[in-house]
Image (cartoon, rainbow, N blue to C red; front, side, top):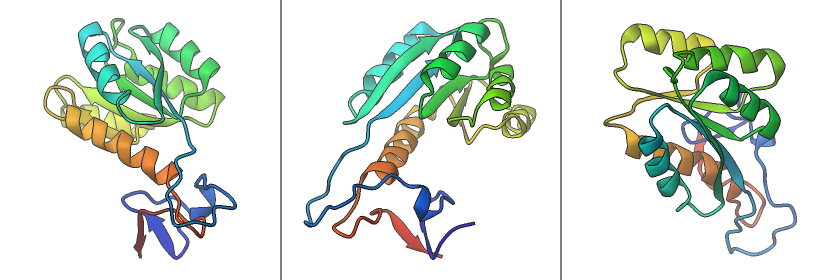
Length: 169
């Protein structure tokens, strides 16, 4: 599944990472723009999270939504790198968004934020295709840190064109 080395915490093969070709200096190069869609019924939460995410260089929130159909269409049309999704949107169909987009595209990285996570919610989110799951009220910093790590792992290269955050297996 993974070459000799993997990105810290993520079983991605090295060949799948975006790297800057032809970099011949030891200076790190940021060349990757990461797009995000926020889907949550709570406009205040979306606004607060958007402000924090956009402080990360190269990260752009390209859409916000609170309903199933609008969220699904936005993901299919804009093809973001990451979707931060509350499993209970205003119409209560957040998990259905995951199931729906998996039928029509290779899904982006999905971060589910739960209002009050239960074991059943984690199982449902996992089966539906969520990559990460956090509690909305207490884990907002973990959401930011996860996006930051995903962004760095896809954008930062050393002089040889290899990702920086590597771990021997």
